[in-house]
Image (cartoon, rainbow, N blue to C red; front, side, top):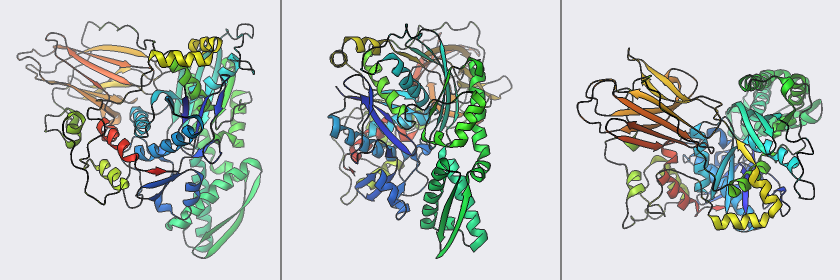
Length: 619
């Protein structure tokens, strides 16, 4: 039985599994490397190259190369055309995942299930866009885990086991005492900080903070602009205006950053329009120009501890995760703020994948557990009132308009529609799917209405536990991780004055899984339907928060008086999936939804993209 963990990173990705003695092992790619650059070269309309070769190609074919895709997850399209076409970040990420899956299967054989990691501070759209990429790539997704939690699990697992692969006596080692860890995860494109408490085999996330638009790439960008400005002052021309010069300068900036992590000064050369600028840069200069970026991470550290209700005197260790933590300024800041040396004993590039592999085993071992607690009791009085009319147009998935072609494909059965006209390439089909114009029928005639994880049956579970062995299986089965939601979730409610505000149901840093129920009310007499707009964010203003889904009770009974109670329940599971149900108590009319994450994550489209991507040759 082969279950793997995948760290899909902004700059590099890694895959790991549990070895024969239960220790997490990083799986090399086809090129023999432990990490794979998360870069895609669209070599032709039906082939793509992923990894180091694609990264090198960015210097000569910048118009055909996609980088830093993770930063655009949740958005409809990648910000530049690729071979003249607009492609979604979901599909670009799916190509990266397909490469990782191919290379892994070449070494291990067929993969029975995978756990994917996401930044703890990813919102619902980004989180589920990542899941959609996994489904499109053909992965059997059995779980999702936040990256800092995965890294902490990898570190904790070493204390649970012996070097020989046996189970350690954590009681004798003092492991039953509470231990507080802070995970500082600075990757190439995202930043997370998470506070966890470990008691025996129980890991509980106390708080998380972060920034999905902050990472090592931002340090690269500062150097890039600094060197470009120097060139403009010396020669007049701007290398940022030429695609090839720009790509070469980006590579130079990254190399300078790496050099300055190893020594206190380095030389560089910038070429553009037949002219060359040479110079020297010191580590002190680099740290001065990026001091504000470092401070942003420090402020998130303080916020996470404050939310967890602890101070640095309560913290037992600090874990450094992500390749960007190798920068000396990061290490110095952590030592200054925490008063201790950060633990990087597991490679910062591999720790997250190792934790994901362990979590995959935990998912299989605990596949029969119930995730949600008993339902909470609704409050007696309606605290808010729902808008009678939609302040914005109702999303197509729940509108009264005729269904779109994709919606018909999601439910229709019968004769498959005709294939697309001859001459269209897989890249054309992917680009057309993004616009919603494709009429190709998905391979599965009745795809699910929402994306979900692959279930593990009892036979698979027992086979895997037998492979682990009695002692290790008992350990894996006893590991329990409790996470939190990174952002507040609520509904849009209308006040007596007509103002639209957010009524929160689940506050940020609430332990998952959780179920919360609240009573609301109709706003006018004879109200015919109720629209529940689900939003995510910390602002009380509806327009400042992210709309992540809509749930509508369409047919309320006639003659209802104003103030008729409506009960809304949020079920938020440990994997980050939100199920919303709205019920009109008097009539029993109800509606429910699993959060729709936008057109790019429509289940029917994912099925179509999966079919299209099977035609892509990925190497």
